[in-house]
Image (cartoon, rainbow, N blue to C red):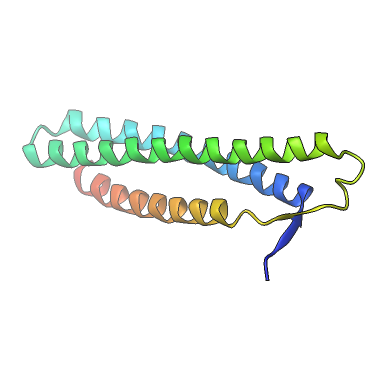
Length: 127
């Protein structure tokens, strides 16, 4: 059976996810700075190669944040249109749960956690 939620429940999840994505975006900036510090202090080919690898992963994560943010905001626009279409009944209307978004966020968070752990290992070795 498909899960149904109120517009308020969906909106709260959207807000939570968008705030998390902003946090992750800030954390990526910090990670990027740490990588630059290590790359400036260590000129070996191994360190440069690893720094490039982590920089590429950070770029990918930033792109994923942008994609997820866009998808969530698009869904929010869909909900706003539903309110405008029928403002009197919106309190009683139920919407399909946004499983796709929930799964995308979960996958992103797992990959982000893995990146953070790998980066911490790299930094602890080379700082």
